[in-house]
Amino acid sequence: MNRATDRFEGLTVFLTVARHRSFRAAAAELGVTTGAVSQAIRALERRVGLPLLSRTTRRVGLTEAGERLHERLAPAAGEISAALEALDELRGQPAGLLRLTVARTAVPFVIEPVLPRFRRAYPDVAVEISVDDALVDLAETGFDAGVRLGEDLAQDMTAVRLTPDLRWLVVGAPAYFAAHGRPEEPEDLLAHTCIRYRFQSAALYRWEFVRDHREITVHAPGTLTVNDADLAVSLARDGLGLAYMFDLAVAEDLASGALATALERHAPTGPGFFLYFPARAQAQAKLRAFIDTALTVLMPEGRRKPKGTRAAS
Image (tube, rainbow, N blue to C red; front, side, top):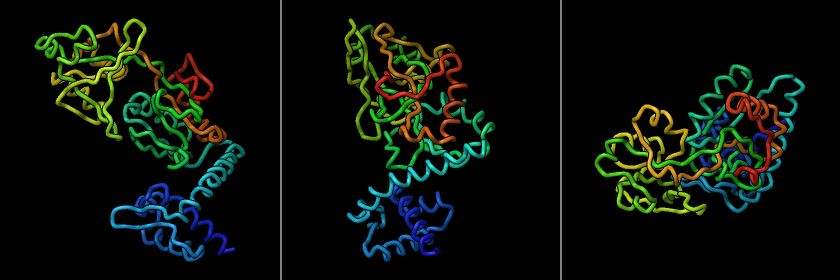
């Protein structure tokens, strides 16, 4: 019995290391020492007779045997976790760990208003939030759900709308427009200083507009490039250039007069923020509780049932 238990624990450690690609991060999640993680992996490798992980001073990777084992184990582990947490309904109260990956720009509009109410209502649910603008594979990384813009979601995910559609605006400080003029057409941006946004993939965000019911893309020029949307807005507020941002993120600055808009008649509208997850995850009481809380807080007059992301836009 102890051998079976050790084997199961070793597989759990292996999956955690594979997800993080780090012994230290796996140890932190499991609440054990890095040495204990290493010992569990060595024991598992002795048991299977093959190396499962390749370790260097900089990174941890999977060997061919490790890849095969991970491919078979990861879906099964997800099913086991879902089955165990489905038993929470018998207790009458959701429990367990809810792991969320959230786009940085969604934090003030989704997490900050929802989390306090959720924690008060469901104190037995531990919550781990990873703020990351990169697109995250939930199955690969072990997250229960994510929050992203609707246009960024994979087609095989189930999604729940959390905000209305968003309008994308060009904004700048009144002092900037006084000094440099206000662009009247999207192409006029080529003569302006634009604060560009670079994704973690290294690609630059393209500024999109609508004219005569057609989409227009402008490769915004500029000598300021950032990878943080809040910083882009802050720099625009300081008069250093024009930023491209959705309306929710700049509403207060527009209301106070700290920022003004340009090209509003060409401003496009796109899907807002959605909570997305694999269809099977909806059976988890903890996730259903979070969905219900989020809809109550964010969409009190227009609550929507989960649906496929094909309808997101």
